Amino acid sequence: MVTLLAEQSVDHKITNHLSILIGNYEYYYAAGLISQKIDIDPDIISAPEKLDNVIKKGLADFHPEDENTEYLCTLLKKYEMKSAEFDDDMKELFRLGKESGILNEDV
Image (cartoon, rainbow, N blue to C red; front, side, top):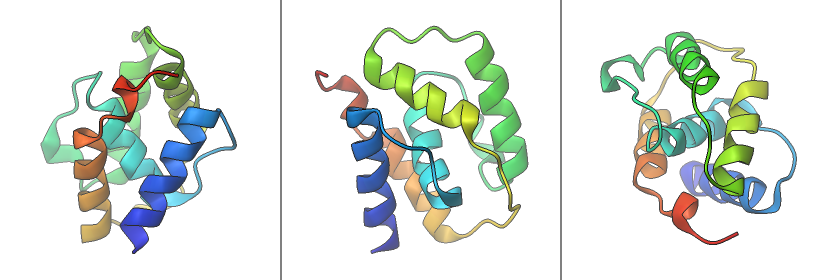
């Protein structure tokens, strides 16, 4: 249930260009999404602060080709990691994001 809510929330935010990411669960799903576009070492996903640093560095040189990916980048750049806690739901959300097709859908 937690993973479904986070997944639906982020998908809605990306397609409608709304709001900000709320918490690490949404962040991890969004991180999985952006991992389709920038290289993220899977060994670091259990370290939220390290993952955040890698993503922000990767986004500095990344140029999105569509509006949904551009808004995803905006959400990730604005997010401030507040907790170093990691759990199995976050791992699952990253996987779901990595396998999602939302970035391939028409705006």
